[in-house]
Image (tube, rainbow, N blue to C red; front, side):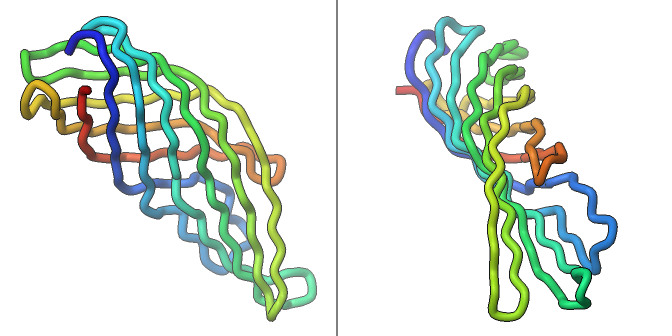
Length: 170
């Protein structure tokens, strides 16, 4: 792939690795997705910007008054990265991404008829690994793993997205 603009989308299982001690139930897995636009500087290097949704962490537990509380944490935001490709064969490329994740985590809690939410912003390092298979000159099948951290009520938690998708070169 030479110089030019690319766009793509991926979807797959996501995971938020947060401390769930003291909860009755804790579901750390969900489905996430990533939408990317990039510019290939040459066949090896590209600059990319992505919107990523790492899904939700869902928890239930009791508060100090014995009330059952249901809550979730949604993590999403923007990934800005430099991507480097190694062309293993004419059709297969291995990709490494390094950059920044600018994420928002939204913590929501519900108990009885009441609810509350709080947002937390964070900027953390981002790492992505992937592979691409050229179906033709413009269209590629992609697979990837995206890793970063997000702030949740003053604590840092790991988030990841394992995904498959398509990429189109314009």
